[in-house]
Image (tube, rainbow, N blue to C red; front, side, top):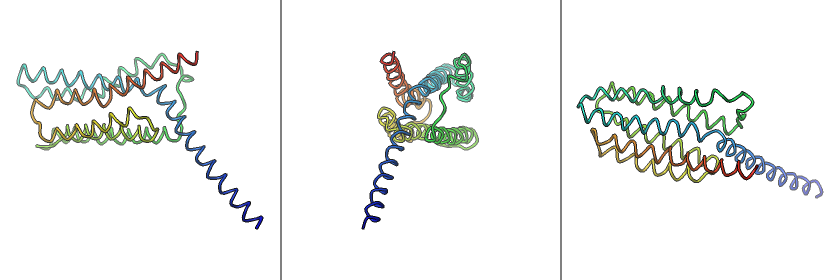
Length: 207
């Protein structure tokens, strides 16, 4: 009887410890996001929006759809700007990633590869719904990140992006480009600004 009671207590303690560990992992990942995730999302979000507007304006003025090649500048410009803004930081300032943070990073790497393949397919296969697929993938990435760390702005903006991505199945041609800009504002820029405001508020409260 005593042995059974001890085993039952150990089981309860193990379950409690497991829940505490999961909660701690989520909190640590969320803190890491608040500290490090806003800037890259803002950079790539604004670069995507500005590139979309540049492509739309160029095609509208010239009628030359070769300006769609400008889309390929997004990862190049994004990483260059990110590197310039981050190079002043010392290695000790970079937060070490939690296990969940590493999983989120791997998910985004996988999504980035999938988006690159979709962009390449758009130039090789016609018609190919690249705008629908890429917007859907980014939205899924943002909402999945939010679900993993229980961060509501990411969840809500990601879900709105998922719904908005289906509009690209009915809108075609040059009319899709302003919609792309709007989508990336909702999916990346808005939640990144909310995240940055939360991080700044927390930083002021800690001082």
